[in-house]
Image 1: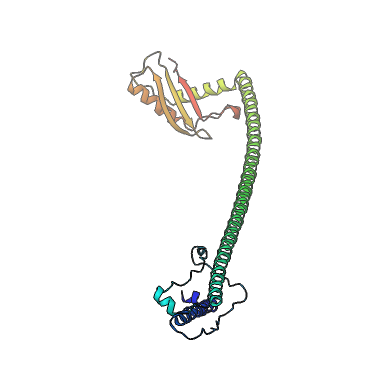
Image 2: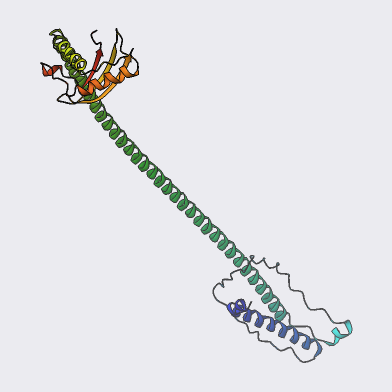
Length: 306
């Protein structure tokens, strides 16, 4: 409120002066009615405010001032007094009424102008607010669009990276699978070649063994071993005719007997023990005529002659 008074002190001072002038006119007229002296011309002083005065409404636009009412003359005194008082100055009264009407018309015009300015200000503020809202909405949509594009770009980049990693993994797996297949085929080829070589060696050995067996060297060697064992055998009293025992003999290179096990045998315990002792007494066993007939593990059927 003090700001309002400070801002409009000029117009308010003018209005106050005008009211004071009107009061002075009414007081002079009253005095003239009650005095027999001739009427005195009154000088009216006022303040003229040039230029429009902008009034900014605090909350609501100022309502228009009520329409100016016509100036009503002062009440007439009683009849007995009218006879004694002179008639008021009609020109002064008319001039005062005209000034009052002009003041009220000016106040109404000012109020309408201020209301129009307030409405224009509100419209401007509303337009500015709508413009700011529209700009904010545009900025929001622009930012959202930029964020969407950035998210799409990030998703695309991640998808491309994942696809590249998948391709690299698949290529590495394919390379390892190809290398493993090459190694497998190589191993199969080598194994097949080894099997074929072993088969060839076995066939050759079998063929050589058959050929060697057919030569009679092995039979000759076994007969030599049996004869040697039989010469070193001390026949026990319990030995009977038809004696036959299977011997499993292990010999070292040079014919040294390492181990003797007795298999199927139809002799009693003294006979069996005497045959084992005969093998140990025959050590070293005689060598075959052909070194190829030598065997470290021998299976000998001992059938002594009667």
